[in-house]
Amino acid sequence: MKMQALALAFLASAAIGGLAWVFIYPMLSGQKKAEHRRATIAKPEPAARQADKSQRSRREQVEGSLKEVEARRQKDKKISLATRLTQAGVSWSPQNFMIASGVMATVCFAMAMLLGGGPLAAIGLSFAAGFGLPRWTLSFLKKRREKNFLRALPDAVDVIVRGIKAGLPLFESIKVVAADAPEPLRGEFLAIIETQAIGMPLGEACTRLFERMPVPEANFFGIVIAIQQKSGGNLSEALGNLSKVLRERKKMAEKIQAMSMEAKASAGIIGSLPPIVMLLVYITTPDYISLLWTHPTGQLMLVGCVIWMSMGILVMKKMINFDF
Image (cartoon, rainbow, N blue to C red; front, side):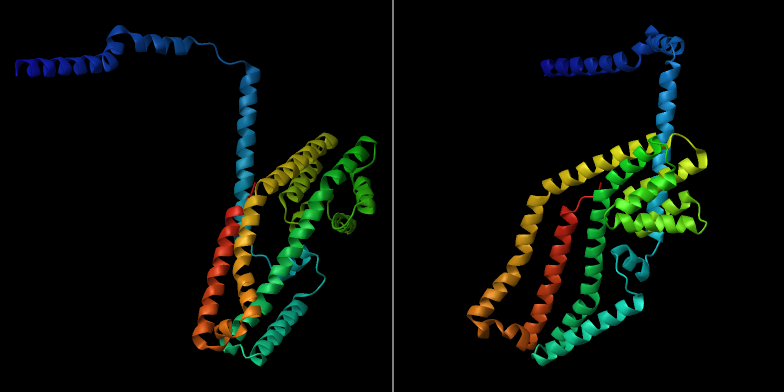
């Protein structure tokens, strides 16, 4: 018992001493006062370093505010059907698009009813053909158009930079790009020229490029031109830096695509297995699987399977699509 009491007393005294060493000794020894004096008489950083830090902080604040404004605008802005058709490069009017969607839905509904699929399957098929398929087609055309635009934009910016260094005005350099660039870049720059020809300032005309081509690179180009038109500066240097940024973003996008190809291939195989198995079973034993669209319970099960498969595909797509 005496040994235990002595051990406990020793441990308690060691703990108290450690706490006193940590909290009380610096105040008694003057260590904190010395540190405070060293901090007050320490040399300030050079003026160039302080200016660089302040400039970096201002740049970070500007970038953060631009991101907040862009996120708020994308959140609040509702894209109309006419704008989506323009972004996809489709020359149809919204009325023609709605009429074509209604015709497709009606045709698919009639075909499903004639083939004996039942009203539930016919409604689901008509909804997919009249609402889902046209909008998926618009999204596909929009993404393909954006890829073609981004593929040609860095070269177009380099052409503008070389034209400005050679002594051409900015408007004439844009005309050179509009004359020689491939579509859709050619059409977008022609739209800038036509908009500027009717009296709109060139900076505002370039800023409106983002409305027809909603990619960050187009927004960067419009912002650079608009700032130069308002405040002046070395436009060739600014556009040269923009060209480097565009090429780096292109490299990053290709790297992300290469790294995610395995996941995309796995998702494609997993998503295509159920329809392929269903088709093979229908080819080999059609009577066995025909209950899915002839019997009411089978129709309900088929609709549930389509819903769950669609949810799984959307989740996999969300997991393998990377934004940067």
